Amino acid sequence: MAAAATRITQLMVAKPCISASHRSSRSSIACFGNDTKGASWTKLRSSSFLSATQTFCKNCHNNASKSERRAVKAMAAGGDKQTLPGLPIDLRGKRAFIAGIADDNGYGWAIAKSLAAAGAEILVGTWVPALNIFETSLRRGKFDESRLLPDGSLMEITKVYPLDAVFDSPEDVPEDIKTNKRYAGSSNWTVKEVAESVKQDFGSIDILVHSLANGPEVTKPLLETSRNGYLAAISASSYSFVSLLKHFLPIMNPGGATISLTYIASERIIPGYGGGMSSAKAALESDTQVLAFEAGRKHGVRVNTISAGPLGSRAAKAIGFIDMMINYSLENAPLQKELTADEVGNAAAFLSSPLASAITGAVVYVDNGLNAMGVGVDSPVFRDLDVPRAPKN
Image (tube, rainbow, N blue to C red; front, side, top):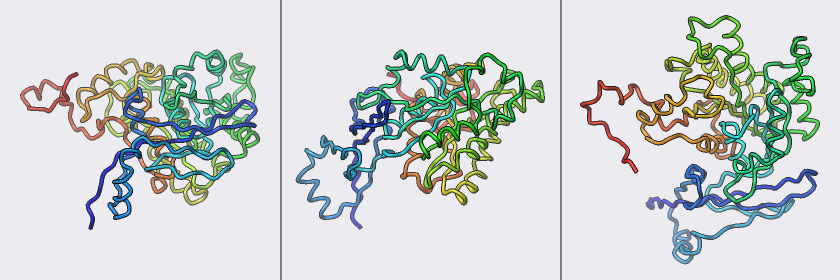
């Protein structure tokens, strides 16, 4: 057997540019090289292990210096796709709906960017009370810096839908919510209505992302959590994923993918992460397995969840000690570096792509390996233990 030759290839991804009228488009190439700012974007590059056949070696020998810098341009929209080099994440022609984006610094936004960089069209569902601020900020260019993609273009969001995933259909909305001034200016924002609106506007989607979580009593220990607070956490953080799949699966194309976001508190004790949120994440992971079976058998759609490490987003600050969790991870995770939202976004892009076509019902950990640790090595108990440390810059 010939020895395997390892080659790190640049990822070349074609990203469509969608105009407001959706009548014209262009294709461009996003190159993720070593010089790209934001080291996490380089994670989208693939390490391809290619068999060293005689023909391959001959071609590499003749063209090695050129192939490292060669960019293969995608064909224009409507034409035949030209094969991209290496093992690319190619989501051209795919449409993604991301539920739960209300600003530009959370995991939902990072996932949208990675999907867009891979060529997917982006639709967003935003919590109704935050909708006006989000759309205004987007329109005025306040997110332009955050929208910047590796190829120099800006992420395009084709449409933003008002969405409150706590309510499945109009019949579920209580009167006090219907008359609430924050909801008065919006219509068709329950899960069923949004799914119907997306179907009417676009016909179908290929990728569904659940980036939703809320626990009104998250700062309370579980023993002090009320029944209403516990059920609210389950409703907003877990059942909302079931509801999204129930209403969106009928408009998802076979081979599609769905992704949710979970946290290690589902299976480990995280003091301070209360209000039933640990229970909600455990339910979400259990549901992921069952939904993977049902969605796979009935619709040919994959269901996975990403267990992400701590991120200092606005939403995460609600628990009150997110900075402590970030510092703990830095000290104790196998990889002593700060986790970035882009790294979670890149993992989501992979799970949404044909490269992950056999992965479903999985909890994928993107946390610098913290999930593998059994103890906190920063404890004074281990002060005399020779624990390897990452070199300081």
